[in-house]
Length: 212
Image (cartoon, rainbow, N blue to C red; front, top):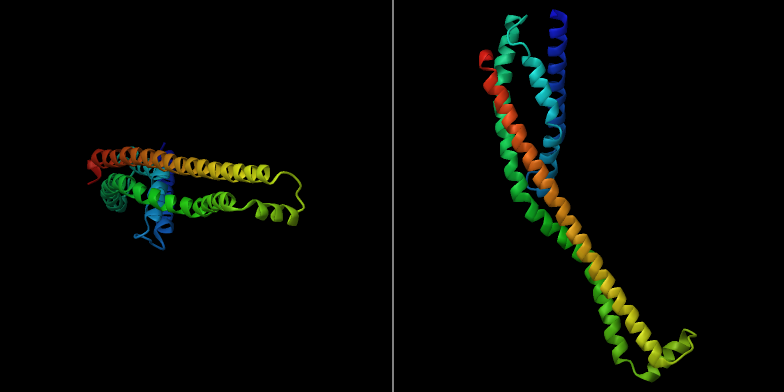
């Protein structure tokens, strides 16, 4: 039983050490002024919260049984670390409320930059077709070796441009809605995860008063 407990605790310390490596890797280099970095980094902490939770449980398992005196100092420190970690996760909830609006605005600007020039071009083609004289249309048809009625040709090209404009507008709207929905889903999921994780870490601290 003693060796089994020791194995539990060794694995727990190992998981906490791996968590420390993850934290260092996530925050270096820091980009605190970048809302995208804040959102994704905070989300990464939430996604990996199970590892330190399990690590703390394994380390504190079975209270003071078969502990060396020098380990008690580490346990006292880890108990307070659990509290600080819990507070940190509760603070992360704020990140998932304040960053999504900014990220949505940035994403919308990118979508507009991608689609608006093409939509404007389709509108411009429609406007130009309306102002062309029949002789100009005939000349364009001859230059491109297209036979047929100039008015029918104009109507077809206007319809094609209008369809292109409609499709691009629809695609822009769908992309925007999809981006917004994904952002909201991640924000809600990670906010709830941060809340639950924070409470669990604080419960670990409260339950390890014997180590303090």
